[in-house]
Image (cartoon, rainbow, N blue to C red):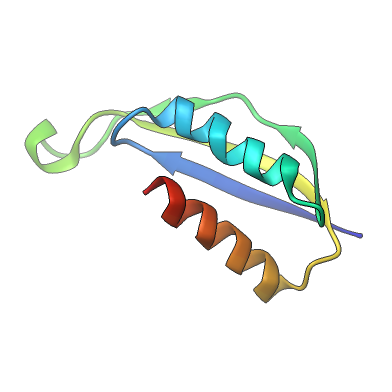
Length: 84
């Protein structure tokens, strides 16, 4: 297995809830084992709220996988598309 770290981030909608859902999808994937989840870090958006939205939330997930880099990217992009 290969250890990977993936970043999570967003500032629109229910970001913390989406993080939980996305991490759940990773945990439920048969070829992925989530090994760690960081705390959530808040960063102020640059610009006015009309332009930039609210504060950004960021986190990271450590995982072990047998997937190739491109296959893992496909999984991550499908999760991203699922939750917008």
